[in-house]
Image (cartoon, rainbow, N blue to C red):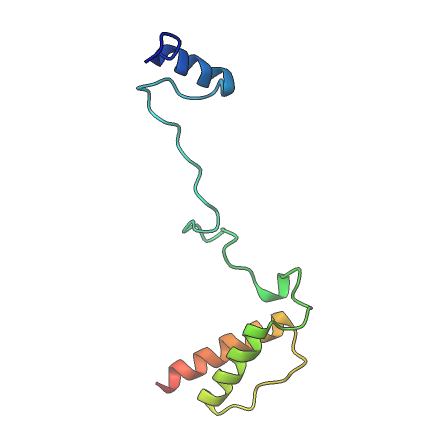
Length: 103
């Protein structure tokens, strides 16, 4: 190891780059919880489809495919090609509930 490459010089270089970095041997700071995976009910992991910013856009290809499958499984004539993302999401939830009750 070169004389200029010591633990102290590496530590000093790290502090220069990030003065808030913890000192070697000290406890790390607490990490904030990811709001998308937090168990907190006020988390933003789920939103009501009526509150979606893109809810009035046409439904996605995945929604089209899943709605067709659920319609076949439940026997409901629920598929309509002109649904919005929000409408499709709510209909998917209804059909999933109906399918699960049939089982």
